[in-house]
Amino acid sequence: MLYNVLRVIRCFYQSQHACSVLTIAHSLRQSGIFSTMREVNIKGASGLCTLVSDGQSEIPQSVSDSENMGKSFFSVQSTPEIEKKYVHHVYDAIAPHFSSTRFAKWPKVATFLSSLPSGSLVLDAGCGNGKYLGLNPDCFFIGCDISAPLIKICADRGHEVLVADAINLPYRTDFGDAAISIAVLHHLSTEIRRKRAIEELVRVVKKGGLVLITVWAVEQEDRSLLAKWTPLSEKYVEEWIGPGSPLARSPSSLPLESIPENEDNGSRDHIEDSMEKMHETPHLTSESKYDSLSLKHEKNTKNQQEYFVPWHLPYHRAEVSGASACALANGLAKKDDKKGAVVYNRYYHVFSEGELERLASGIDNAVIVDQFYDKSNWCIILEKIL
Amino acid sequence: MKLLTHNMLSSNIKGAANGFPLRIEVEKATEKQVELNAGFLRNVFPIIEWKALVDAAQLPEVADSSMLDSDNFLNKFHNALLELHLEKDALVCPETARRFPVSQGIPNMLLLEDEV
Image (cartoon, rainbow over all chains, first blue to last red; front, side, top):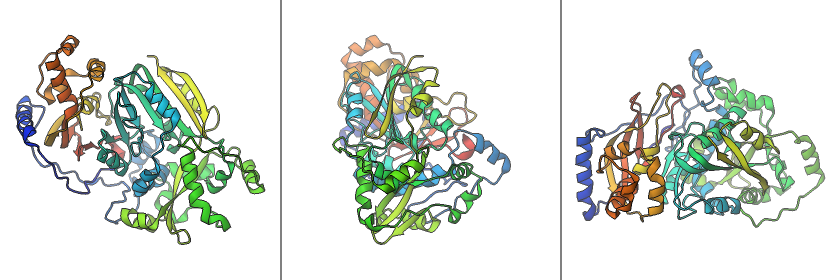
């Protein structure tokens, strides 16, 4: 997935800086690390599923070479189809709308960041719209996310960011003072990848550095929300993880349970948005709503951890982004005329009690210094010891 | 992209034992003013690979932390690390020559399927 420049940036050279820039450029050429300035052309990568902003769509082409298929299937760094379709492409399509709903700073994260020593370098892996970048003005933040549209939003706000994969951070080892991963790991579809992401967070901080991780919990404070999610069978998830799986080539054959259409559809948006906010805002006091439907669902979903969680992108937002046209064509999204929204599904593996702790315990060079449950999220703080 | 970020970035492509530092091919660079935070500069100095920073900006060839007491040096270090802003360029893996693009100041470090 390569980042395409969508518009030309006009660069203003201030007169007092023009001289120094030219001087630097000259010495750069002389030093050898810089080559002569020339146009850099980046060709689109073949063999990848991309939803480009001009509305064209490319059906995902699995790697046809069987040797490569074998290699990429077993590589922990290779992105499974379910994540490409139901995480990456969704966030790319909903980025501005998603960003507009991400504003409340979760107190637990704010406390962690504010308590870091002054002058710390903080790495945010999976920074989304950059909500936490710069939260502590005495620290310097570098953020990365796999979604180029979200990163563009961060950059427009003046943050130092890059497009990268949390499974394979392009960072030197032992560089940062702290790292955070806020509501990211639950989008990874295998345990190996989830563990790898934690290992990467630990790797990139220095000895003594702290890592804060938060993920959505199975144990949701508002049980009625689970009824809005689509549970995925294990078999379904397995079939989606391999790049060569038949489902990857024929999205129309999804054995997806349709989101039940019932009388309270009108309130779905509100509930969904408030669910999103609940995970991020402190003020919601949620009393569990136990009706017969929720209880039955709860019994069935006791061990259920794989879900599609809907995102309703209002039509006017969808038109602006342009990506929804091909998402609908590909079967990745559905129209809901009653609500005037394109409905996307996001893949989640919600964490059960102790799961995050178990994953982190398996990492040799870090220890758990704190763990807690807060607002339907499991949270953990690690310290790198070696 | 600031040179602080460049000092951290490493090519993690399959086949590269050491993907640091990335060679820079600059096309467009600007300067953006950033408030100087001496505490941050002192904290980050030990982790900076000095040669990589020197090659990317105008700085003395050799540096040690005692130089941070000099305002002159502190300002040069700050300017190079945080104020130089590379808008458009390519970061080139020192071992495989794979190019990672930087556009609108944002590096894209994502690898392709056959590169992991």
